[in-house]
Picture (cartoon, helix red, strand yellow):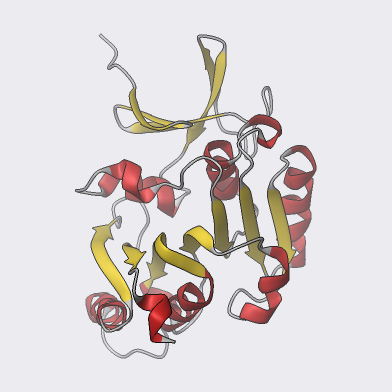
Length: 240
């Protein structure tokens, strides 16, 4: 007998080992993912082997709903690539025709990828593609309407943790949620093996004004990756 779907958020549910989001653009897949209809609602499969956020939702030992933005949230996505994960976050945050009033600011440095993001944005109101360097606050600030409620960083650069702490300090609101998808191979400035690089990044987060809630191991779904789940403490803004 099929398992009863587990609702993680308004637009996200889990069925066994699979994740689905409530499709904001009915009849359209983004990267060829499966779709199905249930009680007149169309759902899109969210592949955890192609999305660090989806992998984290399956691997967290905490309540997975705490890793997701709420409907109507202001979201900042640093390193959006071609927009697959962004589209699932948009499903949850904005909904069809952005009836939730959310905003997903998707920053990407590759012009080719931003062309795909722009095509997505043309049919997904609330999605804001930004061609720019996700490490530079000045290239992000003009496009975000307010402090972010939810921030995700997925950048293949050295000093990923330092960049995440700095950008969270600039844009994440007190109490806001942040996810850092960290790839060990990109930490070229750090000596040692993957474990030591993850440990160094964890130490940087612990020494910051962010509260580290969980280190989520996703290596079985995304090789050489760990997702760090943080919350910006309410007193962080008072330390400036």
